[in-house]
Length: 176
Image (cartoon, rainbow, N blue to C red; front, top):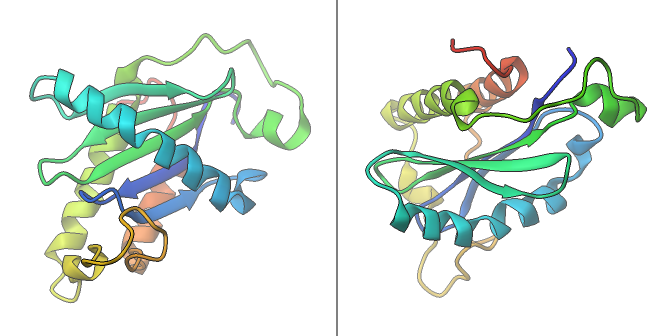
């Protein structure tokens, strides 16, 4: 599939602790540290935008990292943050170095709303699981907030599969 694709989905806890990071296609699948840094760098922007935005959960474009990658954000009512990094050129150029098809004109913030809504639904289903304990994913006093090692990441197989499916099937303009 040519065109913009989701390269990374991050779920960040209300204490800015990483809960889940999914990297969706090569060459990004081995770039966990780089994407963790990119997601972390957006948290200050997220906080500023959250204070300036009305009730809407969709915070839109947070950061255009370069001409290729852009980060978008969504805030849940519980303070959990969803971040999506979009590769505007798509996996074809990432893998081959060549742009397939027409030049990319950019994304509208609304293009990602279906993906964010699906992520929120997947997260709500995770919270409804009686065997899932959200308290296992909160930083404890004395630990460095935001540290990869300060809490347990979400490892629920169903949630992980849902995130991979959402990231793998999203395309701009698809409202479902």
